[in-house]
Image (cartoon, rainbow, N blue to C red; front, side, top):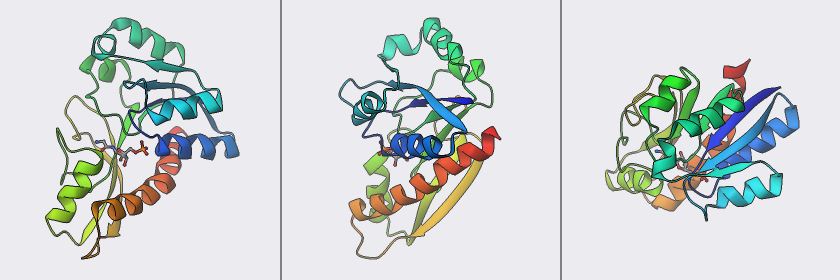
Length: 186
Ligand code: GAR
């Protein structure tokens, strides 16, 4: 059974989709959820699903003890699902080729520091783009920069609000992220 660790800061709809997908097919198990926000919705999901969780701050993110805790779970993949902090180089180096992220736009567009969650959809709509999508990529030391594994596209309507675009993007994420994880661990 493959072990997955999820890092998330927000509501956790992607975490929920991943948990549900692998509960159903039994190929992997989310063994730990790490969050930098004590009141993040993803922690309610962890509690409901009885998945161990860890709340970290900026200091613990950089401690070698965190790397040891992550290693203990022998993760096949560390999955960033709406994790809003940069992953320290020490963690990237401790898990080479094993950390992936999902970004709610077509990188390299609309990526980089400050471009996360609804900020991305606001920027895409404000720029009058007619297309957006998702990017699943490996994590390296630079924000939103690692090798791309998969992109999926959707249209942006002229009258779309950022929230409407966000919900279209979430649907793509919930479909493709679990399946991409499955493909990578097989
Ligand atoms: C997702 O749309 C994800 O792509 C985005 O945050 C959202 C989290 O939603 N991630 C980033 O912007 C990373 N730069 P969720 O908490 O409902 O899964």
